[in-house]
Image 1 (tube, rainbow, N blue to C red):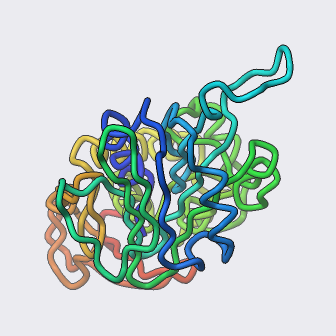
Image 2 (cartoon, rainbow, N blue to C red):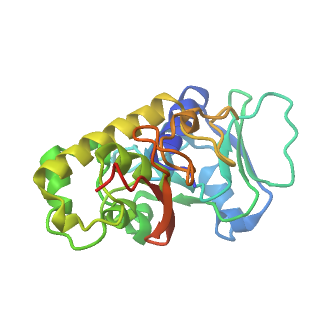
Length: 285
C-alpha cells in the first residue's frame, strides 16, 4: 500500500497537470469504485474546477471549486465546495496518462479536464476507492476524522508526548493511523533500524533519548522517500506512471536473511502488529 512518501509524490506530480482545470466530463466504468452511486459522483464532480491536490495521511484529496458563475449565498467562502477523496489501498493509481492512452479494464473512473488531459483512477484488486464529498461529509468520515497528526508537521515534543508511557509495541504504534498519519510498514521498519530500536520494544521503555532519535530518523526516512519519489516494490507508480527509487535505499525492508549493511549480522523476520517485520538482532535493541 502506498505510504506517506508515495502519496505525497503523487499529489505533487498531479498538481501542475490538473490544478486550475475544470472537470468537463466524468465516466464511471465501475460504480463500486465510487461507493456504488456513479450518477451522484459524476454530478458532484462535473463542472467543478480543481483548486488543489493534496495529501492527508495515505489519502489523496482534490479540492474542487463550484462551477463558474454558480449562485452562492452572500459571504460564503467558495473554497472548497467539494472534495474528491481517493484511497489507493493495495493497487490503486491516480494518474494522468499520456495523450492517446487507451484505458484498460482496470480503469474505473475517468475525469476529462478542460486542458484536454484525463485523470484516471485505476485499481486491479478493487480495494481502493474514490468519493465525492462535501466538506462536512469529509469531516464526518470516521477514517478521516480519526487520523492522527502528520509526522512531518509535528514538533519533537508533540511526537514524544504521543509515545511516552505507551505500553504498546513501538512498531504497532507507528503503524496506528490514529497515532500518526501516513506511516506504513516500509517506513516504520526503515526508521526503527536507523534509530537502533527493536520493532517489538515497548514504547514505554524507550526513554526520552531514544524517542528523540526515532523522531529524527522517521522524518529523515520520510523525506528521503519523498526525494526519491517513493518506493516501487509492486504496483506503485507516480502521477505520470513512473516508478519510484526508494527501494534502492532499503536497509532492512524486504531483506530478511541477508546481511545487515551495518554489522553483517543476518537480518531477522518476525510479525509485529500483524505485519511482516525485518530487523537486525545486533543493531536494534
